[in-house]
Amino acid sequence: MDKPRVDAENPLLELRRLTPARIALGRTGTSMPTSAQLDFQYAHAQARDAVHLPFDHAGLSTQLAECGYESVLLHSAATNRDSYLQRPDLGRKLSNESAQILRNHASAHPGGVDLVIVVADGLSALAVHRHTVPFLARMREQIEVDGWTVSPVILVEQGRVAVSDEIGELLGAKMVVILIGERPGLSSPDSLGLYFTYNPKVGLTDAYRNCISNVRLEGLSYGMAAHRLLYLMREACRRQLSGVNLKDEAQLQTLESDAGADMKGNFLLNSPKT
Image 1 (tube, rainbow, N blue to C red):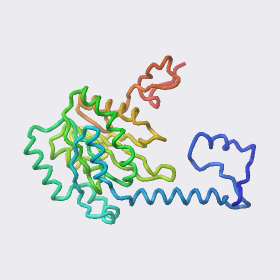
Image 2: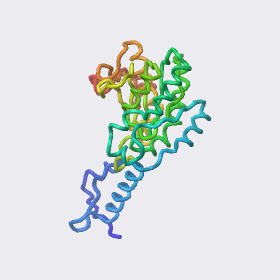
Image 3: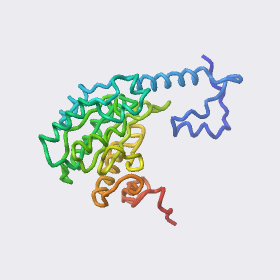
Image 4: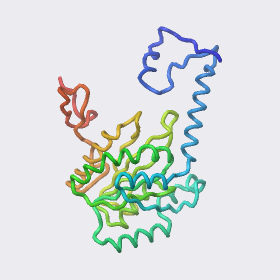
């Protein structure tokens, strides 16, 4: 196998230690090195596999039960993976049978709930399999501290983000959060996304949702993602809104903070200290 030509004066070489991005790959003649090309093809195959990996809802339900969460399995209006990928609109609503299941549940438990947690395979069931349970384990204690009533976790096969609005409305929920597999990238086939909505109902646009992205071991940690989500939920209850009018200004701990003190606000919004 050919070896990449290394330029000791290339400043991008130092950056390779800090990012999985494909930079400073070197070259063999006028072409990309074979090793870099094979790595690219492998990453592309991982992304394709993540999109088509079947949703192991039975295994996930068992893990959730061990963590103390009940669960209910539903299905979107997309009957199979092909229709899900070709018809995004079908993944945004429940099948008639699943909608009726929720109506029956709501009739048996009138009064609604504070929070509904939805888990959908999305475009990467791999992300859901890997990260749902450890993330919800971090959330459980704080949910109990805040005293929120929670429905069983709703598992949705072939689901997209907007399906959570219908679920939240049918269950009379004050808030809904959906954990969903994000579109795989060439360095992140298992990225989990969180989408939060206050007062969910059918027909809402993305402007009414808050997104926390790239939840995985190599991205945003479970603890930080839970911290940000809980902040959004508490602020949403206080201000009775979500989406573009609700900014993430959670207090963040940084390595530069003195003695581990929190830095108040979003570092993108705050002016640097002088």
